[in-house]
Length: 463
Image 1 (spheres, one colour):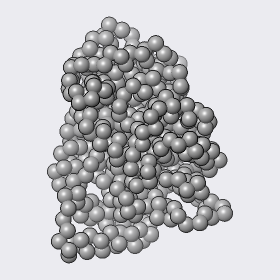
Image 2 (cartoon, one colour):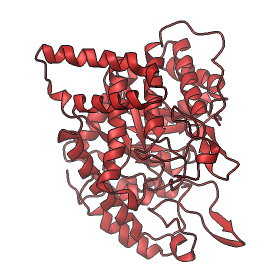
Image 3 (cartoon, helix red, strand yellow):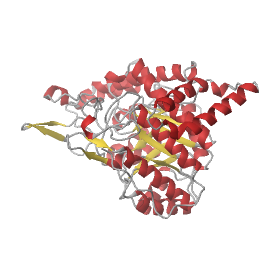
Image 4 (cartoon, one colour):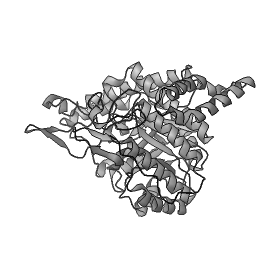
């Protein structure tokens, strides 16, 4: 791969509407930073992107399951070894449960090592009569409400690169250096089951994994896969100047790859067909995702397939649906049916986070665990009814013991949110809520071929 060569043909996006881009105050400074980034080494390798596309092709065919998760918005302060380790630990624990329960490989993709920018509903924020640019993530400006912190600074894009490189270095060390050993990961899950208020519900599954590992050990089986784990990075390709600067021509194929991550996605706010984000994504060879909200029509989904996956290549395109628990059962069936009927083999993921956000009486933005779970349940019900494959879940989570979402086995109420509300943007599931969700998703997957209930189960209201 020629790291110094930027693919200039990708500039076609620059003539199209680009939503959610910062208003950089110094265009010359931005050009200088972009020029520097264009000469930096790749953060990921093109062969790894191809490998992920192959793994996702198996998901599209119903032969694997995706666990995609991580921070809502990473911060430069969160690049410590402990923070990265705890996120990886949580995802490894979840994937161990899902692998056993689904009896198919689990593709692990982190919202990590690049998720430093966030789309926002308004360009400015007003406090006490003072109006400043909205916080758009550490890649653009600072969270502190001052003119200095909120002024977009392109130098931050170089910090994104270096923070992502450090994070990826840690991830590679963790997943290949023994930390991902399946027996160790299962010990963590046994501790979770033993200490969880609802652990008894998961004891049978944990015991079954125990029995399987004991049997394999008795047989002398010790495959390499028990001691390491494949792990891929992903983020929203929001800041197009950054993504284009990190696009390189692969020396093997002469094709362009965005080497900022193995997979990138286009958000609900930036997926317009005539927009710059779709144009950029159509030119790169990475696996690409698109968020689909409840207003998405089948015609829009089919048009996105034509733009982003014209060759109908399994593993190329992932649809990440974010409908909300109230809409998923109404909106998703028509989308899945029409897309499947077109012959396209896309991966379907459920993002049960973004459609279920509300503001608590305390003023905190939060989500109910029961709402998150109900959207996942609706996602599985739709795919079961259509005999299609529920490809996986896309979750905002952290390995830290935060209090940002209400409910779950370790019940967090609205009155608890202030205790450890640490997110830079949207509320995340903590480690215990994430593992709780993994066990429940595992049960849903195991039940996916059983007859549907006539009515969905009632949802308990979280405190």
